Image 1 (cartoon, rainbow, N blue to C red):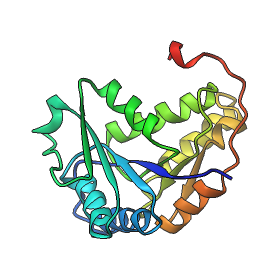
Image 2: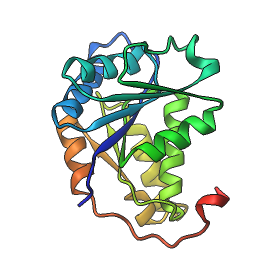
Image 3: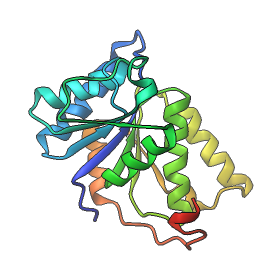
Image 4: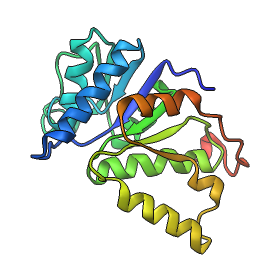
Length: 196
């Protein structure tokens, strides 16, 4: 079992027209706050990012946003957070979000979300951390990624242990449950934290 005191959520700074995406972001943000877990996210005040943060704040939650100074105006950085940390680069953003978190959830998002998800899963595969990772699937959004991961495993490009690093869930409750119940993987350490 993993002690989850802070969860990093990756998600889009846009909001699809389908209200189920906003509802899922709100449900996750609210549940994180009600469980007295700190929410760490990309610091935006718009799109799914804003919905997630606002829902956590409305429940009295602690919310830490991490955003590069150059993106603050473009992503309309959230100004009502418990804490907003401005950093100098996207890499520094990801590193700080990782450092502040015990686990990760990916809501639907675009290329940035996909890249953040891939990086934390890769770091786990390389033995740099043992923090659990979950996808919160909304209306089958993550099904193509799940199929791709399964195909990678099936053809021998991804070991089953690597495939198991990313767990698919259907609700906020299930996502947080999967994170809390996770057994930290014990992968072979391929590189050191300094080498990443």
